[in-house]
Structures are given as C-alpha cells and as structure tokens.
Amino acid sequence: MSKLFDLTGKTAVAIGGNSTLGSVMAKALAEHGAKVAIVGRNFEKAEAVTEEIIAAGGIAKSFQADVSKTEDITKVAQAIEDWSGIWDIVLNAPGKNSSTPFSELTEEEWDDIMDVNLKGLVFSIQTFAKRMIAQGKKGSIINISSVSSAPPLSRVFTYSASKAGVNSVTQFLAREFAPYGIRVNAIIPGFFPAEQNRKILDEERTAAIMNHTPMKRFGEPEELQGATVYLASDKASGFVTGTFIRVDGGFGSMTI
Image 1 (cartoon, rainbow, N blue to C red):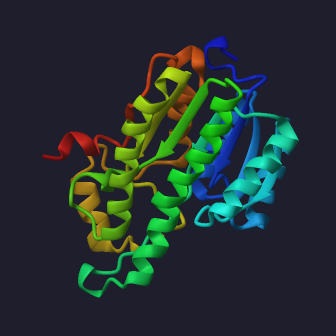
Image 2 (tube, rainbow, N blue to C red):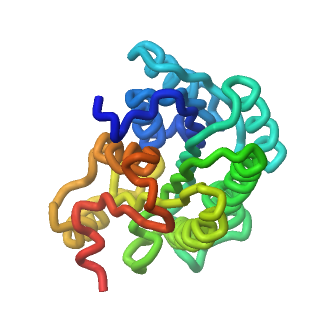
C-alpha cells in the first residue's frame, strides 16, 4: 500500500455507510487501514457491511442512527467516541430521493428528503466537527453531492435542491473549519444505479442521461473509492478544501 493513501491508525465515521454507494466508500477506507464506524438507519444493513469489512481483515463496528433526528446524531457520536476515541474522517453519504413532479410535491415529502439529505448532513457535521475542534483533532469531512445539484436536467426536484444545499454547506464550512485543520470537500457522483434511483431509471430517462454523459455508461460504485481515499488522506490532499471532485463520466463537461 502506498504511504500516500495509508489511513492506518485513523478512525472514519461512515454515515450512510450501509447504502449501496456509502458501503463501497466505507470499505475503501477500511482497505486502506482506517477503523470504520458504519452508521445507518437500517442496522441489519449496517451489520452486513461491517461483517464484510471484518471478513476482509479490516476493523469496523455498526451503529444505528436516523440522521434526521438530532438526538440520534448526538447519541451515536458518543457511542463511536466510546468505541474508538475521536475520529479523523467523517463521510456523509445518507440519501433519499423521489421523482414526484413539482406540481404534486407535498410538504411531507419535501421535509422527509430535506431532513435526511441536508438537515441531517448539517447537524451531523456540527456534532462531529465540534468534538474534533474541542480535542484539537485535524481531519477530513467528505460530503456526497450529486450531478443533479447544479443543472436542472433531472426530474428529482427536491433531491436536487437538497444537494445544491450540500454544495453550499461544503464551501461555507471549508472556510469555517480551515483554521482548525479540518478539511471539508465533496464528491459529485454522476449517475450510479444505486438502490434509491433504480425505480426512476426508465428507458426515456436512461437515454437522456446517456446523451449528457460522454462516456455513455453508468458509473460503477467502486469508481468512487479513489476520490474517497484521496480526500480522506492528509498526505494526499492536505491542502485541499472547499473542493468538488466530480466522478461523473464527463457529465459536468456537457452542462452549460
């Protein structure tokens, strides 16, 4: 293993680490030596990811939390600290989606998606970063955004709005936390057929996505691992903050 990407001795918190994409990124952190806390609302899925990491020779533990509830965030942060001490890396990868047309959008659905994708992310960062700052711990916060966060090319209105918020939060907090040595960046994935968006990938939508993706294919979850480990490594990206890394098959180069 290259020393540039060696995370041995570091603790990573993978919020949403039980999801399709989050689990792959969490496994990459473990493969590079990090001790990983897998945090998810569905504890059984979190346990399955933890077991895979342990079977591969890594160190991990599962934790249950609903990030839309601030009391859950507070409790899980304490539980993780009791398990491994203060953390070095926080990966924010929870996500909810819906293809409800704007004219049919309800307040309940808006709140449900925003509570997970944006409010949950904000208060997770607040909770975990405050503890890092209090203990003088430098490190990396990695947020997961989306190509839907900028161009209005998608049907997923609320999801897109929430991810635009993630971009703003990322840049604001990069400046806020820089004096403490805490880097805040985001990965902007292109279209990866994860669990939350498979149901809205009909033939018409798939064709539209391919028309805006120069590489003419969907991404594979493992193709997010390199960006994740890069941003987690102080040696590799120690002077990188407030940055968006696109892993999108060229989708960003096609937007205007």
